[in-house]
Figure 1 (cartoon, rainbow, N blue to C red):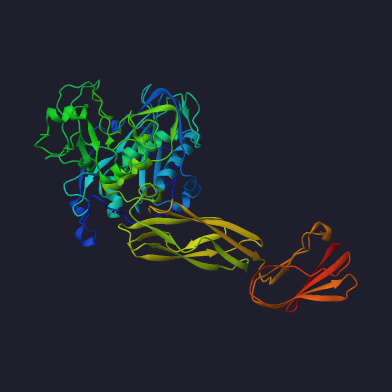
Figure 2 (figure 1 turned 90 degrees about the vertical axis):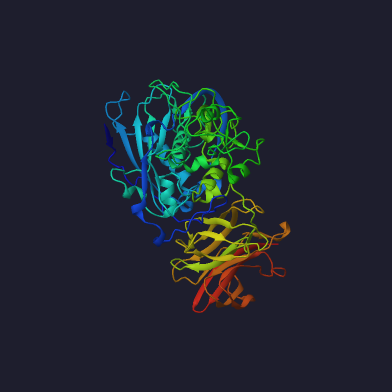
Length: 579
């Protein structure tokens, strides 16, 4: 029996925004409220949900590591386009002796959700039932969706989707419509495995298995990396009949994943002329015959341009493996590549903390709304233009807010939508309003960036523009700067530099001052005994920082006084000059 950790729901929550969905292969129907009737929802349990994926370790020391994009990792929270809610449970009476999730395992699990939160876009939180339990000596984890569902008016007709995907596509909480279903995804993690590495640095030591990689992998199955081909097996998972079938229900209907399954001769596995259902032909294909099975969605194939394969081969070993065959990418083809996450076995000294280009392409083909993490992998035939390469806010006061705009456009010669999102680094800066964009060719959008200083000093930050355009690498990083005086402070006179200024060394003094509003400014130079030498500034100046150089060419060595007058405010300081 399972029991909940006390801190179970909403342990991991982010403010979500929804990016536009790019539909390149399958066109979804309009999702107007009039076209969707929740009474038409169709639901089926997933066969053997506890063992949809049975992920195994290898004894290979891969020494292969992929961390999240550095800019993205710094901005997980602001870039998050999906949220996760988790019930952390522990199998009572397990041989591990645990009564709650170990803290380091808990933190690594949350980090994995951090990664996924920027790759998916869903206004509906994805709820996970996470179980710390025994799975046998050589099994790392297993996972799957709690149900498969269909909703007329959403997605491809007569096709099963995972709960989380259909919820994201329809903007409706599908699980709430199903009696007894409280989660979208169920994940089991082996509490009795001795070689876990719980770090989040993607630097797994020799002999250890990276926990974050395993969790990312299992969440991937729960959200939709799952096909419906099955073969009869006995309790020992031995094949009892060399007949394969595809689909669930009566009549059997395919999963969305199945629509993209093609054999080595580019024949669809759903083509009943070639693959009667059920048939030995399906068994032959799922065990490596007929050239194997490939995921042939356009976006999936396009994502492979940087590696020496032209098709996304799925895992179809000669010996059928329930829970692994067909619902993974090929182990050998994608070893030590950015697409290695969804292989059926995990190496030691190995970490992939990203879904990778291929998985993101598959999600796009299947209709999953994508976040900026996946969009950055899937370059569209779009060309981004940004009208600022830096944003300077000038000088203001604590407690004030200064705004500037930035324009982002999709060139009129583009062939596809430009999609992406904005993220700010720096506590004193923020995006005011929407942070996501989806621009058709020729369109542009204005975004407001604001500076709200919290302290009287100079501030720096950066604006990252994540996008899917081809012409400029993502993200585009734009420096932000601003300076603030104390609340109600108009002027700050600072110490001259260098001090002393030595003429023989080629230096002369510079006098810095800052004003927070347009003012009449007078800056004068005096001898130490108060005799006026000359005016350095006597004019009206806009708010800003200034550096003024007094003429010292006719003066002897000594100490001088410089005085700044703005309205009724007077400040003065000393400088030393050496000829």
